[in-house]
Image (cartoon, rainbow, N blue to C red):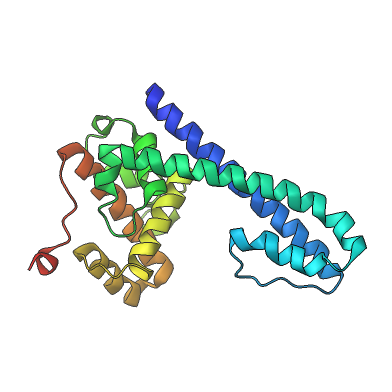
Length: 229
């Protein structure tokens, strides 16, 4: 059984995710309806600029305005709710000492830190940090028969939201963060031999182990000897 604090955090994260999904659904519906009339919005359009872009596009067409403005109003209300929930999630993460230490890892942000803490709840539940990656479905399945022992795709067991958050954090560490660490160096080497996706999954699995060890030991993230020097 999870603690009450863990359930509160998970409820907040779930509410944020639901609002985010609803915003995306409405945006996709609006994009689809505009395509019928030959209007194609830019793919890389920030959420805050979406409302302005659509209004500028349909303001001269009374028929489109009558059809799409109500959907645009609904989407704006959902977006404002999402932004408020997002602020609450980030505030909760920064107010938590464990999450603050987690965010000392390059690529690990408020969502990943709070999601991991809420899902694990108590680090003593895991006797070994190595089992945390398997708990969240980041270890490969194994197909064994006679002399054959073939690893397959990851198991996708456990909490999918935490697995997605760890994957996003690993991707940010490898592809966007400029901070050096031995973990990033290991992932970059792996990327050259195994490919980008496998390397990100492997780093996400390592991140789960590191996060649990930091929590259990009360330690800070160690970038490595090169970074320290």
